[in-house]
Image (cartoon, rainbow, N blue to C red):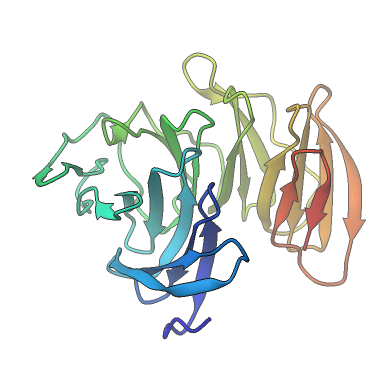
Length: 261
């Protein structure tokens, strides 16, 4: 497929498999329809999403909302499938501007500072009510999707960029990966807080994290060419694989199979 952009930073497929989204270096998100044969149809929308490169992209579990993050420090929400933008975002505070169909409406400044750097990762909770975003400022924000504002103060602890965030299937735990070489866990059952000590073992940037379906194991992949499986009950790491090249993506399928590349 041709996008006309110099680089594509992220791609995502909607949960129903009907839409492919590509995050472009020119600040746009391009959408294609997908048929039953997985063949791409014509471009259905090209969204002017951000003022700079789009660096994060995710669909909500029900496919009704798409979230994007950018080098412009902003998070945007988009209503699917008609792709109606839910507000222009802001540089001035911790808010995602909302819209209700024909009327665009700014929804408050929230209670915590927003990202002060590139947004590298976004992920929806299993119920779709919360969006986690990780930024180049080392912060993680948890957004109330319906109200378009943070649920509370930023989660801090990483010393460098937060490159990936992922929810456990029950939504009670968040994992984050950073260019500081660590993986962290966050307890979301009450007031969000760090869960134990950072998970150490990688010797370079950690690009990706993913939970197993039962939530007992976390996989992580790093630029040092290693992928770890963490047994979360004991926060112990078992090396899954080592390669010559960097590993930037890890996935755990519904049947527990781990794929790294």
